[in-house]
Amino acid sequence: MRFVTGYLIPRLLQYVWVIILGITIVFFIPRLAGQDPILEKIAQIQSQGSYLGSAAVKSLIETYKELYGLKGTLFNQYVSMWKRLFTFDFGPSFFQYPTPVSELLGIYLPWTIGLLLTSTLLAWILGNVIGGIAGYFSHKHWSKSLDIMVMLIRPIPYYIFGVLILILFAYVWKLFP
Figure 1 (cartoon, rainbow, N blue to C red):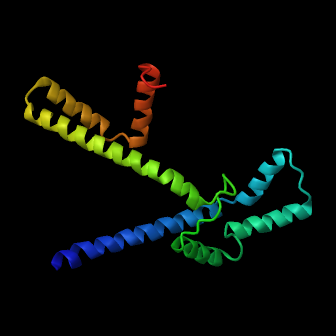
Figure 2 (tube, one colour):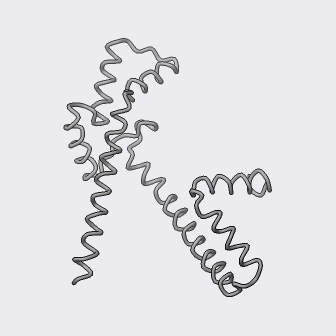
């Protein structure tokens, strides 16, 4: 019981707090940017050669505001966003309009999870095998060199390290297309 009240519940409350805070930050940052994504979308449509009169532009702005939950005050938009999140109504995609975001999630989420699981398992297996061998032969020269190399690589962020590996395998060694 002490584990549940002393560790598990505070940890779960912290997770919930971080998720709420993260979603709130993601909600407010685009609104503080000072740009109107609807006007940018209309400008993109017009730049592709479509002519829209002022009445059509006003109608399109109202339609987009309704579709993307941008009508009303900031507080009403915030409440509407939470309602849509809890009902899994993410609306239409802004970039692949009119495809619903839930449909895009259904297409791309399994691939993302598959890649994540594969890379995590591969990293865990390789890390344990190489770490076990290096630990067993800890007095060898190559083991100490590996230890130094790992200490140099560890502070590099994963995304930068991934780009470096991609450059190495695709451009330098030409193993990947």
